[in-house]
Length: 313
Image 1 (tube, rainbow, N blue to C red):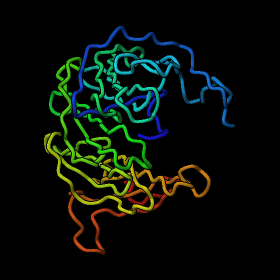
Image 2: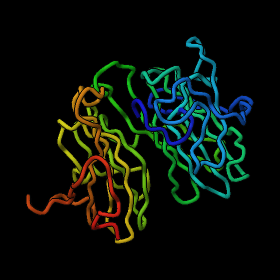
Image 3: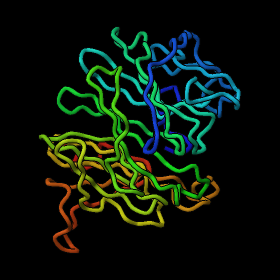
Image 4: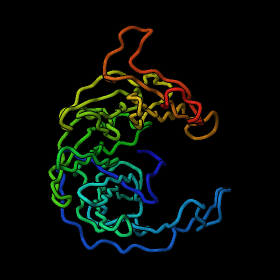
């Protein structure tokens, strides 16, 4: 995940492939009931204000504004990449901590459990980045009785659109949410797996190439061994990347493709940041039968009016 799009009011991350460790966490940081302050309203709402639909907000994780801290063992100032899952009667949370969004091994993932419907969380594990790689973008998925975490590990390289970062998607799993396996590669180099979804005994994930060149669909029957299928969206000039999958009641698979576009568009100097909407019928991963009947069809981009989408049934 790069610059923005947070699942919660919290920052997070994950990576791994060389030497990485999973250790019991120190005492969990105390949560504050006060809403996070914001120096700028950005023309929206006063600092500290909450929208009418939000009944409660509190800060769960807070790190000091200190760039010298060891983020492999402590909570640092930049917390992002959150994910939540309900599993074994509890709510589980994972996030990345680091000094910043910049790739580097001074990062870790933190796992928490809530048994009171999210009113409070207790930390159960800390997953350190490999000693020579960054770790980020954790997502939960469940296979049988096991809880899995998918994460991305990358070389600490500064490059445009995560080019030449040698991304490796890894998984860790646990029987209890406290003791976790070592990270194991599950994807080919250069592929960034996004959120994993299950459908009728098969697991699916959308994956984007390093350099934001294209998005493809991968599938698995066990959550460990993955096969690349059809291209979801392959217009490199649009810089497609993080893609969310949603199974529709009709059986169609919807893909919401983030597109960063040109450098000027990404920086907001011109154009607009867009979301491409793509969908496919089962079996989803097949290669296109003909040029006129591709496995994936892509339509609107930009602001989405769901009521006007013909395949939403």
